[in-house]
Image: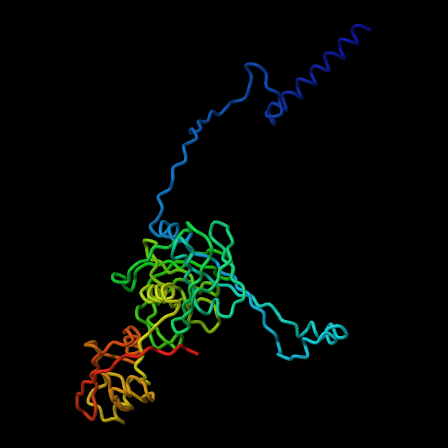
Length: 384
């Protein structure tokens, strides 16, 4: 009996040793570690956790950080009625035909745009078309605040408007200068693109002094390829130092999206309009009272002109400063106060900058003779 037990024990040990040998050969990872028989250990060294270091910001990132707090998103709303009819205000109609009354009830239309805070005490510069006809204007600041605004004054001919909010110590933009701005300089466009809130896009100055685009009455646009989309109107165009050089106003696009050609109102014009509206409540411009026309080959041939420079007077407004000074249709204006007039846009802009009541000397070519005319500049009538 004892012998049989011993035989079974020996066979069992032999089977276990064989199994252990197979496992140790084929799958040593399944064997538990014992002291002195552990598998090889790979030692690794980990670098200590480094203190976070601020990354060096690029100049354009610094410019964006400086200018963005002064840019606001604008949401406007106004009520409009599909069809004006006094019957729609009738109480009986509203009672017995509620669906019809609801269909022709005033509708609230909303639109989006951008603006630039130009003073800590709450003046905001934007486009006229952003706030025209608005019943309610709400501004969203970069810090999350929402403020109500009212229109202080508006100038449709330059497409600029000034808003006022009742607040103080607001972040305001720094005005730049166009004296050293050149084609190719980097710029940033900041605004409420597609209603997404504060968005920054970059590009360069593509051209300066763009005129005769048919966008505004007075045009001297900065052209840029920075992406400007619906909602950017009224936002800031800033230079590499974060200073304001233009108010984004329009894009050139059949589809309505950015195609790399956008226009901004230069800061010189924007600042002049801003100061006049704050000071006087309106914009005052000089007025001559002529209908100017650029000279092309056909006009030069028709009037038998020796040169193609200057601006032709197509018509003279009755009782205007030009009429009282003796200017005539077909006169060719070549100079105002010593400055040459190359095209109609330049003539209108130059006259608009003159102070009403001032006397200026205008040089014209009349019947191939150079004539000097003294004109007392009038006040430009308001646009209707």
